Image (cartoon, rainbow, N blue to C red):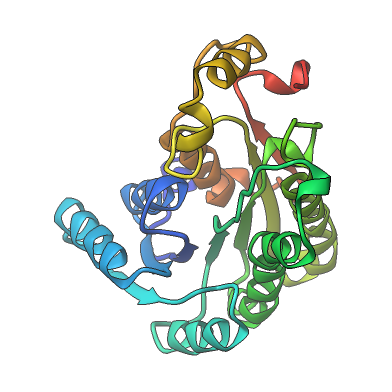
Length: 258
């Protein structure tokens, strides 16, 4: 009984943004814990490469992929129709997709800031709603939304992203309360500086990089796998009394601000 609380055998997870970065690392972590995974990403070639890589590592697990832009509602609906055909509902939904566009508030035109909200917030909101009937088929299921440290603390150059991610954190808390009656736990993680393709340009600036380290007590950039391990924990039966939480995966950054 104790060992099974730390396993995901027989559980089916849908992971968005699964072709790289935190999404791919999360898929790998869930598979290592015994789960089956449905991968979603925009680029079909990158998605297929990720699926091949994971299949080589976990040949005994079910790993399927679906190319879709989750910021597009027609593609979201097609995705969930496909998911429904894969098995008896879902046990886990992980929303990792986000659009991080740095810039000061006055530098954004309306189309640009609305695009950030469409990708980072509205897509997760709609995927949660569309997946809810599938998750509710099981007595215990889980959603994890990937927010950001900028949604918890002011981060220079991330006003728009911070607004969207703060709303995502609040969505997490609200859905946790609404859907507890259906056996669905809803949590979030809020990463700080993680070494992924999305952060590469900003961290390539030597001055910015040194300032980030100066505000991070652990004095280093985080890895996608370190975020994925927290996401996976939140999905485990061992975390069955955790819901409505937003866990900062930030090397201690939240003690300082930036």
